[in-house]
Length: 162
Ligand code: ZN
Image (cartoon, protein in one colour):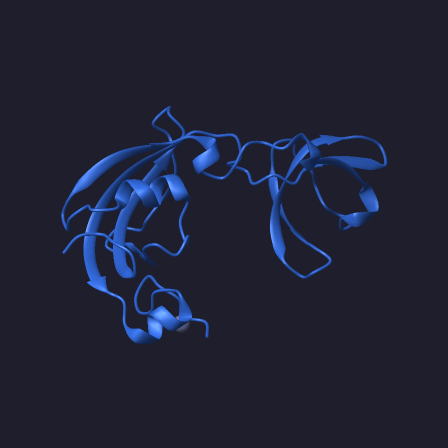
């Protein structure tokens, strides 16, 4: 069976940014499961997985525009120090979680700490980066009707919280 739309794919992956240093990977024996063709993984990776067979491995290089997007200068913002807990310790380059007005938790990166303000970067930490994936397809199966309705994979490695 090959990777194609509305199939649940179990994938072992390792991500680096070109220097070989791993920044993310699936746990050993616990591949990521996702439903193919539903934009659950970055587009440049999804398109390269199309047609792969079980057991097949591949190196996939994804340009920023097909990954987490180009870095947007408008995402650099200076915010009052008071928006953070008084005891927060800031390190330049550190990524922290922040809650938006809508209640979503997003990663923001500390760029600069000035007296009363902090310069933060609201871009995804991987925006502007070329992504290098080493992937191995471990399993491919047709999605169930329920999964197709929900738009995501169930079971190990898939969605649990609903
Ligand atoms: Zn579901």
